[in-house]
Amino acid sequence: MSHPRQAALPPHDLDAERQLLGALLVTAHEHFDLIHVEIDEIKSIITELAFYLDQHRKVFSAIVRAHDRGEPTDLRAIAAVLHNLHPSIDWDTTLSDLSYGGDAANTNYYARIVRETARKRDLMRVGAELRERASRPLETDAVEEILTWLASTIDEIDQSGVGDRDPLEERDLLGAFKNPRNLRDVRIPVTLGHLGRILDGGFERGTLTTIGARPSCGKTSMGLGLCVHASRATGGCAAFFVSAEMTAQQIALRLLSMRSTLMVRNIRAGDVSDREFNEAVEQAVSLAATGKTVYVLDRIRNVPAIGAQIRRQVRRHDIGLAVIDYLGLLEFPGKFDRHDLKIGAMTSFFKSLAVDTNTAVVLLVQLSRGSDARKQGPVLADLKDSSCIEADADNVLLIHRSKDLDTPVCDTEIIVAKQRQGETGKVTVEYHKGRMMYQAKISSGLAAMAPA
Image (cartoon, rainbow, N blue to C red; front, side, top):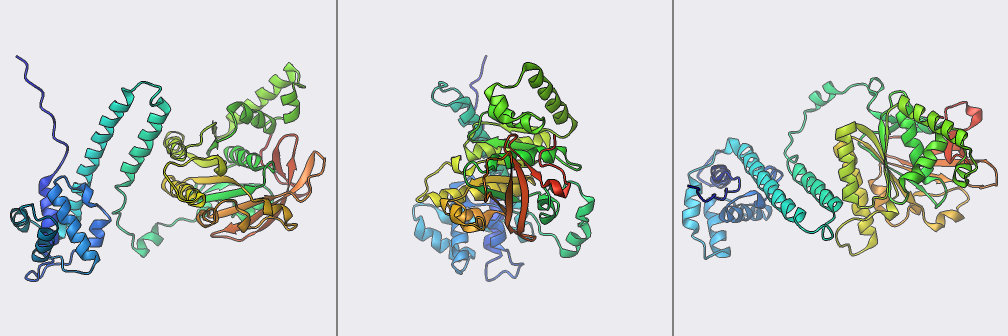
């Protein structure tokens, strides 16, 4: 005989909720000379939504509201507030139950239990919504959209558990600090003439670098070159190039030219014989196989989806550098009153992503038309759309080509306009139009940006 299946209750721990609220109420009472509970610390661990019972949510909300206003938070004061706000609820029974619990020394412990059970409920909710979304016809919710939503939602739940980390004492922090020159994974190598020296060897992990230029002035070439170089350099790393406008075929064309001697224009025009083409591909593949890997993702514009992809590549392939091409084409969910607020939300997102994943994130952006009139080159104010681009970036590099002569090689200035922990300055490099790559000045004898 079969029995009806009982619905499982969502994860919860009412005892932990009572212990936590009881501690907050009892230790604040004027008749108890117990240790002071830092409500601000509890607020950094949980919100009222973490509680399972609605009455417990209302109690915690009343405690926090009174605390923030500088009002008493003892049992009697909170009881008066709750009776006034929600007169239909039997608060005498609820508060009497809470008054018997509460160990002030373990409030953080109970708060973490409440938070973790709430996160489990969130995961169950996500699972239920995933089943519902996956059951719809494909034309309603594309698979890629479902996966993007799932990745960003899981990231949000994951981040809800990092607010209560204990700070380090200065002596412990200094004792664990190691000389950066002995750590290969501290910086992503950049060797392009004097630029690498200005950047103290390269891009530091956990930082956001913005590279700005006018259209057709070499942003993409710079971004791809950084990826190729990082994968080939001593102490290098795997890199990830994300394009919002180019197809994989177009990116492959540039990479082939960078790693061989073929010109982009000749390949595109079909002026390369099968033998030359096959030899170039073989050479490029061989070079790509000798170092770390460059991963490429084309035609993606959704910012949370890009973030989820970068997190995934960090977990799977331990990438150290992620280049996004480019900011002006990206899309960010939500409603914004102004375009600059939307841009600011995106740059803040990528800055947080760099810190969370310990990855050097490079964001390519366009400069405003006003930079064309500056003979001395662009300045920070020329960053298009929002001042947040400058504010959120740890480094800002501006590409300036004063003369675009009809020659295969032209001088280009890389202006380090901002470096949060280093010097600024200018570096003159060579841009090889035929192969769409940057190289140190021949006179310097230094390596190319994208070594062949």
